[in-house]
Structures are given as C-alpha cells and as structure tokens.
Amino acid sequence: MKNKINLTVDAVVFGYESGNISVLLVKRKYEPFKDEWAIPGGFVLENENLEDAVQRELSEETGVKINYLEQLYTFGDLDRDPRGRVVSIAYFGLVKPNTFKLQASTDAEMAEWFDIKKLPKLAFDHKKILKIAIERLKGKITYEPIGFELLGKKFPFSDLEKLYTTLLNREIDRRNFKKKINSLKVLDELDEKVSVGPGRPASLFSFNKKRYFQLKKEGIIFEI
Amino acid sequence: MKNKINLTVDAVVFGYESGNISVLLVKRKYEPFKDEWAIPGGFVLENENLEDAVQRELSEETGVKINYLEQLYTFGDLDRDPRGRVVSIAYFGLVKPNTFKLQASTDAEMAEWFDIKKLPKLAFDHKKILKIAIERLKGKITYEPIGFELLGKKFPFSDLEKLYTTLLNREIDRRNFKKKINSLKVLDELDEKVSVGPGRPASLFSFNKKRYFQLKKEGIIFEI
DNA sequence: ATTTATTTGCGTATATGATACACAAATATA
DNA sequence: TATATTTGTGTATCATATACGCAAATAAAT
View: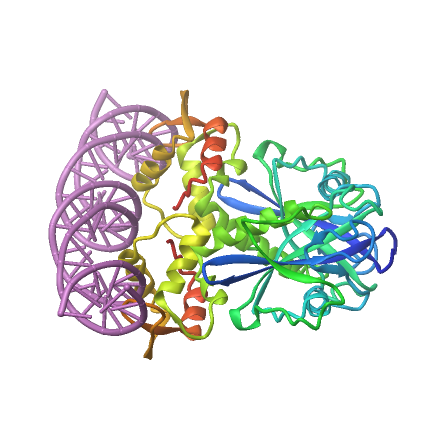
C-alpha cells in the first residue's frame, strides 16, 4: 500500500463547575510550539483504534477520565503542522465534576482547565478546532440532554439551569425550563436537600439514564 | 515523525430523479473485493487536501460533478480493510439531476446509480458507511433545506414534495408543507409553467440561494 | 427575636406554531 | 363532452412555547 500519512487524534474536553465551562489544555514540552497551550492529543498507533488512541493520550497527558466521547471532525489542511502533513481526527469529550480536578502529580505534561471565555493562545490550528467544538457543544445541548454529562451524580436544579444559561449565553425562564425538563422525565427527584448560602434549600436530582437512552432511541428532539 | 497510516477518502454521493433516491457506486477492478460494488474513493496523496482528494477520486472514477459536499465521519476500525490498517474519511455529497447521468465513456471503472432501497452487497465496511450517510441525509433534510441541492434549477413544487415523501418515507400534507416552505421564503415562483401528462400545469420554482445562506447564517431551524 | 435579602419552587393565561381537513381550477385522455 | 388527474389554496382546531407573579424556606443582619 501507499501514501501513508501521519495521523493524530486530538480531544477537546469540556468540564463545568460553579457556573464556568472549562476546556482541558496541555502545555507543550517540545517543538513545534514548545511551551504553548494545545488541545491534548497525539499520534495514532498502527494497531490502535481511534477512540483507544484518544483515551490513551488523555490519560497520559492529563489523567482525566472521560465521561462522554464522540467524534468531532477531521482536520486535514496541508499546512496545519509545520513539521509536514498531519491529519488529525478531533474528538469531543465531556467530564463530570468529580473527575474534574487535575492530579497535581501529573506534571510531566502540564495540564490545566481554562474557562472557555478566557482562552490562551493556542498551538497549531487548535483555535479553529476549539471553535468548532464549542459550536457543537452549544448546538448539541439544545437538542440532546447532554448537559447531564457535565453534572455530578446529584445536583440541584439550579445547577442545570446555570449550565444552560452559561452555555447558551442568555437568560432562561426557570419555570418554563423546568416544565420542559419535567416533560422529558429524565430527572429523578431525590429525598435529599442541600443548602448553600441564603435562600430556600434545594432538592437534589439525579439523572435517569434508562429514560435518557429510551428517548435517544426514539429520536426524541429536545429543544430548549 | 512516526506512525504513518494509510489514509483514504470515500464519498457517498446521492442523487434524485423521478421519485427515487440513488447513490453512486463503483465496481471494483482489483482485489480485495474485486468485482464487488463499493463507495467511490481512494488514497489521499501526501500533498493533497482532503476535499481535493474526494473530488479527484470522484472525477476519476465516475465523472460526476458534485454540487454539495460535506464531511461525514472518519472510520478507523482496525479490521476494516483486509490489506491492513486503513483509516477512511467519509464524505457526503449531493448532485443535481443534470449531472446525474453517467458518461458512458468512463467505463474504465464501472460506475452506476443504485436506488437506496435496492442496494447490492458492498465491499469493506461500506454498508455501515452508507447506513450512516442515509441517516445523515434523512436527518439533515428535516432541519436544513438541502433538498434543493438535489433538484434542478427549475422545478415544480410537486418535485420537492415527492423528494421529501420519498426521503422521509411518509406522506406529507401538501398544504402544510407549502406553508412551511413559503414561510422560509427560499422559493421564487417563476413566470413559467410545465405540463406533464394530465392535470393542471404546474408553476416552476427556483431556489433562492441568497435567502438560503441568510437563513443559514441566522441559524434558522427548519423542521418538516 | 425580628427583619431583610436571597434562593427555590410552582400555576395560569396568552400567543404562537403545527396539524387536520375539502374543494375548486386547469389540463390530457377517452 | 365527460372523466380522470394533477395543481393549488384557506380555515378551524389543537398542541406547544412563552410570559409572567407570588409564596415558601432558609442565612445573614439588626
């Protein structure tokens, strides 16, 4: 066979905590773009599935455990890597808050979360990749309840609400939003409350995965 | 650099004529899967953009001119090619009826249109690729007016209607459908009529591209 | 202990958009 | 001239989305 080409995977991983949406970046240790921030990723091995490659690179570079992963887009422009032709298959990932904190130990490669509104300069064409990933996140959250993938096992309703207002960058009427979510029946109300700061204590909810997969199978559209 | 991998592009190209949706396939001349039908495609050259590779392969193998092209998905399973590891970036294309007929001359590789309801056995994992492409086509047509990409410059309204009923595999109420399309204002009614067979002659319409791009920019959702 | 600020939590009324449905107009064919 | 066939429109009803106000439960301040 002929025409072998360098192939990498890159993973745009989003996390959410206390009203901020963050993306996971790593500081490059080697040229090109040494000491600049980049989306985690690396070369695909000859005998390795694409998703395995993503998981391996993420685990090596950041130690973060991915909760949701899907393919984003394949970038193949000729000049995207100064070393030569490199085609990159980008993935889109979400993590829950418990796996959100980075182990201080993994400083072999420095990994850090960045608020998506305060991004540093990025290596390669990673700015473009990130832009497409953010669009996908915003788009997807309005028609599939993937918002839950970013929340913990138990959460107050206001967390979900704040996630949507942050991501969609607009106010949401809580009463109508709740009606919509309730109609989907993907939330189970737990027999437990939390109270943070002033105000009425909030009931905790959990995400009903069974129901979620049922909806997905039926192709239910979910429009916020 | 290291870990070079064989990279191909494949293009699932749809056409539409007289109520049938067809896909373009080529008969393989060489092993593996010699004499079996496959989605057109081939190896990406070292110094060639991905889209250029698609267009080149399509032109070499089928002579068809693509009207609309977008990336579909990248397939990278280890065993998808018996010759070894081959990662394939699949594309999704639509052609208009005027470029629909295949030149009889290009029989170097035999290319043929197949009704998507009467598909032959396919080489490699192309059945899987085609399945995903058909889902994409069906999904996409309900929220973006790409249906027009499959029609000629001028067409009677019933052609558009039949395209949707065929693709969605269900009846559509013409009056409500027309209301929806009219509200988008993407159709210009021409001062011209056609009459085929019995029945009232039909006005011809053309597709207002300017308006279409405007809608797209505004992120207008179009739900049939 | 009382008041104030803050957050959660619900219900109803209105507007907007989707669906259901029937008949007239214009032609080719018999 | 009658019949079959296709195009072409309007209105009434139903479902869903949006707009909107106030009570309940707490922490913090006085």
